[in-house]
Length: 320
Image 1 (spheres, helix red, strand yellow):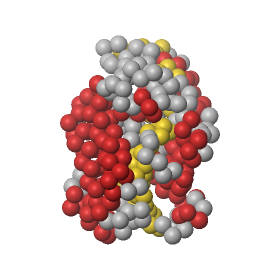
Image 2: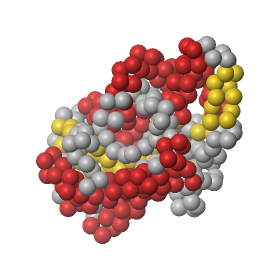
Image 3: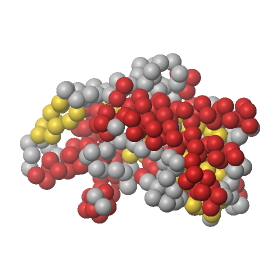
Image 4: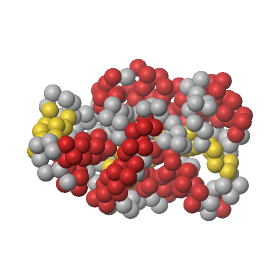
């Protein structure tokens, strides 16, 4: 707990889905000087804005989570902007952090950086053994450049940068916009709307055969804060729950929890994405004592409950 007592912390993306939970976890761990400016205040894609941000806040520690993200549809529609925006933020922020004397920087990558056909469970050593799945390769590679930059800066400048690879996240405050949401919020919204409209069927993307692993957002926030406290290595670290579920089974589970009793129809003209995703989470446990605590079904119930309570407010905010 004493680790945070004298630290000024900059959390990029701190008002977002994961960022909100990281800020709350930092407070629980004893941090009192936390700064989480919105992107409209500092545009981190521009080096002069990054310099101004660090000059204004003067952080000791940076947790960099700001990203332009989305599901398969958003990645297919915006590969260029997803690559540039995410690469530019990482490059400028790491460089300016080094120049301004930041003590430590925690960078959040993505498992979209793993090769398309990575042996399951994904081990960090496999990260460079192939090209990522095509629909999200630009995003995944842009984020992976922070690992390269961090390792290079550690070697040349002694800059303390760590790199974490969170699996697919879910939980309260997730993005439920159908144009950019990931699979769990998209399914929750689809199932509830199908139930409420009396629809006899619900159409889902792909074949349902792909598998995914999911980590509850509060577990991920705890992992990030623990890693920032305890881990100073140059090796990437997976953050996950160690469970694997097919999209078909996931869809049926979400439909059941949402009360939709109709038929699930698969649109195989839409892509499945990466065939399988499941992480080896040994390193996170060994290096900083993290393991996931939230059961998957309970996490889904909490996510559905949050959406039901907040959907009108979140929809209005998304369209401002």
